[in-house]
Structures are given as C-alpha cells and as structure tokens.
Amino acid sequence: MAELNGVIFDMDGLIFDTELLYYQATQIVADQMEIPYTKDVYLAYVGVSDEEVWAAYHERYDAAFGPETVDRFIQAAFDQTLLLFEQGQAALKPGVHGLLRYLDEKGIPRILASSNQRRVIDTLLDSAGLTQEFPEIVCFDDVVRAKPDPEIFEKAHNRLGVPKNQLVILEDSANGIHAAHAAGIPVIMVPDLVAPTSVIEEKVLHILPSLVEVPDYFEQAYTW
Image (tube, rainbow, N blue to C red):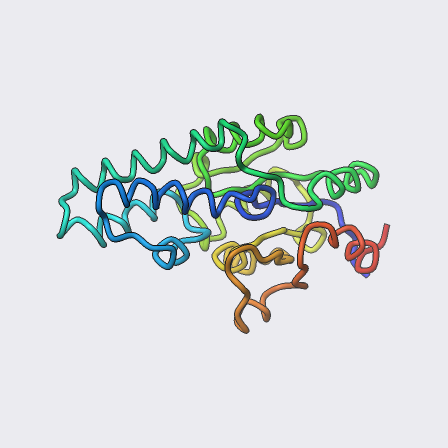
C-alpha cells in the first residue's frame, strides 16, 4: 500500500457548489441581452479556464452580436456571478469540513489548485470561513496554460514537495482528470454536473459520490 503525504484540491464543483450558480448568473444576463445561451453551452466548458471560456464565447457569438457586445455579456455575467458569491450563495459540498478535519488529524498537508482567478477564490473561501484552511493556493493567475494542461498540478506538486506517488488529486471535471493524468499524479473523481465517461474511468484511482466517502477510502487505500 502507498503512503499518502499530500492532497491537491480542485475548488469549483468539488469544494463549492458553484457550477449551477455560474450557469444561472450567465443565463440571466444572456436572457436580458437576448443572446442564445443554454445549459448545454455552459456544460461544454465546465472545468475550463475563464480565459478559454471567454475566447469560446467570442468565437460562438461575435458574428451575430459583435465583439463589443460579447465583451459586455462576459463582464456582466462575471459581475453577476461574483455578486452571488459575495452574498454567500455558493454552498459547500457535502463532506468538506469532515475531510479537512481528517487531514488535520493525520497531519497531511493540502493545497488548492483551481483554474479560477485568485479574486474569486478568495471571495469564496472568505464567505465560507475557509481562508485559513488553504494557506497554499495555485490558480489561474499563476499559470500560462489551464487544465487540461498539467501545469497547475505540476506547480502544486512542486509547492508541496512530496513525491507524486504520495499525492492524491481530488477533482470533479473531465479537464481536471486529464490534467492530473498528464501530470502523473493519482486522482480521485467526485463528479458534479458531468458524469464520468469510460475514458475518464480509466484515468482515475476511484470515483466517489461525494467528499464524505474520501476519508474511508484513504483509510483503506493508504498506509500511515
């Protein structure tokens, strides 16, 4: 059995139930601006960096609405989403506090590796009282290439200074799984909005229904 000496956390859809809020905020703005936006469009970009999503929106909508209108759409959707976060509407996913307590008891360090912007991460952590729980963060601001590129996980690995085979990444998205696999770091999937495919299933250690089950899995899979 392997040793476990570090855990890398994704954030959106794993720690916070944010994905539906992103969609709802964007749909509100799209409806106001009469832009043909749907949940399927949103789901196509789950786990992708903001920068790549914005580029995709320009590719999708510039011809019909013009780049300036698309810029306003993107900014208004971002502002609406951040407002919801500041109001504390992003609920914690089940099992977050229990898992953090478990890692504290075991003395296992952790780091947050999110494709989101630091401004958004800080807002969410502060609203949930979790700022002190994640003293180490790697995010959109720290990398050149977002998931599914492995850069963010490589940087998280370097910060922790733990051999890759003694790390575990917790992820909910396909792009996160691909990034973890490319980085050569074991990954557990806790699905959120998008169910795992057979390709994803081949790249993960395990698939768990929520973070609630993670401590029991660790107890069975690792030595202490």
